[in-house]
Length: 413
Ligand code: GDP
Ligand code: IMO
Ligand code: MG
Image 1 (cartoon, helix red, strand yellow):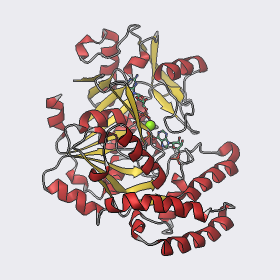
Image 2 (tube, rainbow, N blue to C red):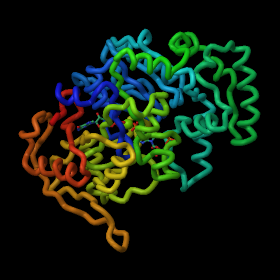
Image 3 (cartoon, rainbow, N blue to C red):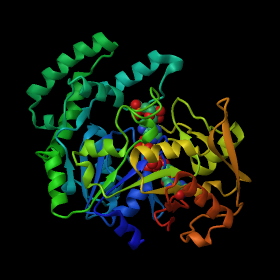
Image 4 (cartoon, rainbow, N blue to C red):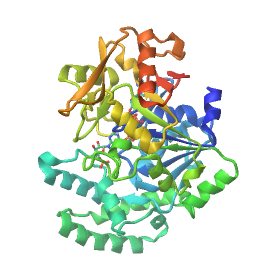
């Protein structure tokens, strides 16, 4: 492990290669012990990053998954959209679990605020779209980024404003939102939630986000960047319009943090040993119902935010290569290998034939438990071959392999 950690350098990023929920949180939690700062860059409470430590499950939505390590500084970047009640809730849950976070939390003043009305608009737009709905998490992400792009949003720096300024802003917004979406803003509710957050979070909003991060970097602090969502959900490079509203690639993460691209030493791509997707949109390698049900039940493939059953299917090599190309992955973390333990054969899509049909390669299954294995050599031969196949087909080495939910259930090679 130590050799692997050293190879990551002092600024490393972890980025999802599929449609999210690859297991980024677990990798972050494991690696964070060796870093001084863990930073979320983009997205909001649409993320759900689950980690399991000593049998206890923690789900992170806004806070980075590395924050269980008591010494690490926790940073929320300018590219994020932050729902304040969710942030307070997360801080409270951690406190209940004996983890204090506030004194090491640093929030970029430029991150945007997600209000309740953003969530209501998200829901209304999805309803309007009917059968063409995106299948969003209804966490207000699209509408908050819409406000950001239209330059009509409110940023975390507004926590320093007095309520005398916030209320008129909300009143003006209410008129526009009613006219445009037919959504009514409950101004009293919004003000109450805002004030509650103001008391706790305002002191944690830094003066200048990029200054803070880059000063740490110059002082030799090691920074771990936690990607949220994933490459195929990227607003520019994903399966538009069935994507999220942020930039989910490593370039997007650096932009969201205000860190220069040339400071990045390494980037780990995270992909499941199979594939899942929540929400609508193309999914070339979606499995038939029987196989999808097996994967879903064995892999616990239900959304950590919305509890929706995830659509399940198989790896598609061109998608992995595409994500690797965009992000410049140095290595893979292939997660949830153990979920395939009972499969007779494991189909992998390797391309399309002349009529646009997926070309399948069928890898033999291993039909034995890999749960908790931490040594690559102890994996059954077929599982080793499957991992080597991914490395060979994508041209990128698989260095981390997940064999269970627990923090310790990871192979490093
Ligand atoms: P993220 O959004 O990328 O952080 O991933 P999620 O937390 O949404 O979903 C991944 C799920 O798989 C979580 O429930 C993890 O606890 C679980 N998980 C992660 N790695 C492994 C693994 O190697 N094996 C198994 N069985 N579960 C894993
Ligand atoms: P993590 O970080 C999986 C999906 C939604 C929907 C689309 C748009 O846990 O991997 P949004 O609410 O963002 O407007 O929804 O994007 N989506 C995710 N799917 N994991 C995520 O995050 C996701 N964040 C957004 O399901 O299809
Ligand atoms: Mg998730």
